[in-house]
Length: 478
Ligand code: 4AD
Ligand code: MG
Image (tube, rainbow, N blue to C red):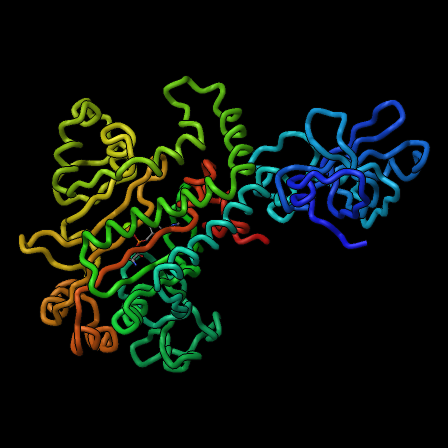
């Protein structure tokens, strides 16, 4: 008999025919003459109820069917007497692939804390919460490719090992084959990287953007979707040392086209989740409500599905950095001295400021543009005021910055002048500058932090819980 997926069986709910299923036991419950086994095969958050006659299978076999054990079950699909499901499987034969000793298996059928599950990251896929998170993460990755493919963007694979550290996005991880003990030294006493694998110092990339621009200025519209690495020592619920970023880059787009694309893209992904992941979203919504039930009403999050619909159905607010500073300085929070970090024109906005704008002032996602040039990267288009650049950050509730992007400086002279001012090595970047030297065009792009977006869609609170094996300071287990 051919194995069937539990998702299909529960969706079609056929009865009166045999079926073969394979999966892992979530729970087992004993009634008078039968055992009820909840079997999950990862295809859906929902379990198939297996009904096993005690007399037929015997206590000896049934006692080994515990949470975590893996089974193959054949039997007859019948309409379920119970209220939880339309169909169940009356077992004819049960094969145990592997037992899971209840004394030793860490995933017991009870509530485990997310902290505990992080230490069991190899097994946490077996929980309902994490299986839901990773099914949604997959659906979002697929939706990202679909979105861009349907719009004529090309998926460009930019390098992971790079010699340029021009982005200035944070500390980089060095990639080297030189010995850690007594590496070769140059005349100045520094490490002699000419003897290294690539004949120069190399790092893990912090962004695929600069290479992405090379593609966009020929292919028109490209996107990257790959891992990026930042060795910043920020132990927060929103930072990873290894995270995935989606970076579209578009020729002939200005900052307004860029904002429109970012908003449309985020709404498309949100709609895709609502259209395709509803079982998992409902489960995560209930999880979140339980988690927050002891919080005062004004500190609870909006119900998850409602929140996604809200983002889908409302225009994002758009405002300039300068306006945002005014809003913040006029706020009660500022006037009562309740912001931890200073608010004045020229400072980088902190997460507390971003969240105030989104959650208290505008009460919806916000796109901030035209930041002071001093706090942004060298490649951003310089505005006519001489003070700001055409940067844009998209800010989301509970998360803060989810997207960072800009229109790019297309003028060779302005760009090289700014690079010199900021100490970016102009010579080393000859290949990047060639885009401005030959057939330069206005262009723009942005980067979406994939895990930050998954936090938003799943309602999870810690970025370590939306990537399979998180990499954070002092943590690279698994
Ligand atoms: O704002 P960032 O640094 O922008 C860039 O890297 C540009 N090159 C993007 C572009 O214009 N093509 O990073 C973009 C996004 C942030 O908005 C955030 O969502 C996410 O990447 N991000 C992180 N996510 C998790 N952990 C970290 N340490 C992150 N740093 C940035
Ligand atoms: Mg940023």
